[in-house]
Length: 202
Image (cartoon, rainbow, N blue to C red; front, side, top):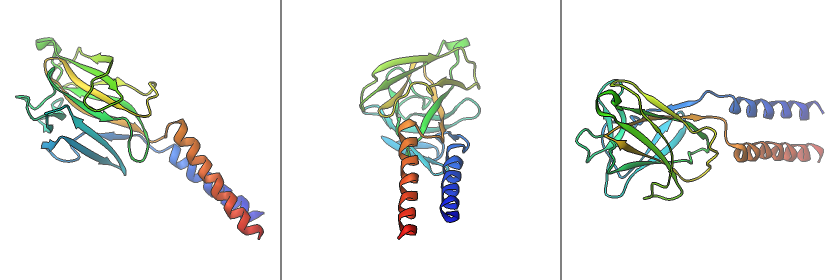
């Protein structure tokens, strides 16, 4: 009985530790600067996330100082994202976590009226549904867009320059899995405990 209680406590502590870990921040500089190909997978703290360029484009890692760092496109004169192209970010991370916030830079509204537009689609090569926009920023300032309550478990967040050109500065990933993943994780833990209990009873 004591062994069973001990194993249960260990399993639950592991589950709680997993669920309460700190959020993970991606800057899109994890793979360095310059051309990154038509897709690039970024890794932070054991979690990976993949971005794709729009058709005919190449991703570009930009690092030109505060507010001018992140993901852009190679064809743009400033290596940013403009109204003629976009960057797609896979909603699904590995392992499966929840994307909570998207960050943007180089939105110089006061002088150029620039704006970042955020879309969602279920397939590559499609902008899909407009979710919202980020504007009202100056040079060197990073803006954010909250996607934590949208509930998407597949598909892509798509970023384009609604007006002017902008940079996709990063994302925050919540280390707490979505509801389905949480249920699967807890179910697996309980199943493992069941197997241990069966062995102890034999």
